[in-house]
Image (cartoon, rainbow, N blue to C red):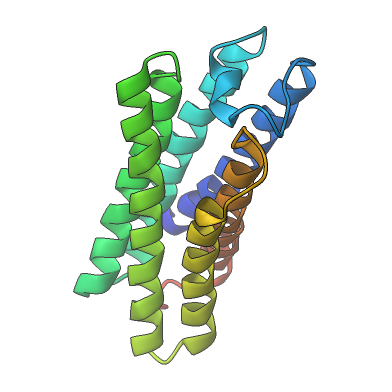
Length: 193
């Protein structure tokens, strides 16, 4: 039962995150993808509550996904368990970005940094675990996601704002989460990674 709940939470977390972002942008005609950061939606305009609530809910649902993934697929192996802990900490950090909007600089910036750090580390460890279990396609997919998350952060973009790089960095994690959410729903209980 936890496996199915976790799968649904993994998929729902990303749908809620994307929808709340898109609705917040549509409610904010002043927002510029090239001049603003996404987090400005949480401190300016009529969409602040929607945007911050979306981050908090996405983080909470992602936390349930991380726990369910750990209990259902990651078995008792160290790499898998460390991956689950990293996903859980990244999920908590995502919620913290909504609890501490950008106007509360230090906690928000720490939460943002922690989110990208823990999510990258978690997916990297899970990818290594998958490769050691001869699930090379899933492992390579996971490692590719980590590379994309970080490359989009490091590219010197020509804009003054970071909304586009932030979105491009989050999308690989989002797709990975939905893919593994579906996998939780489809795989038998005995499958582990």
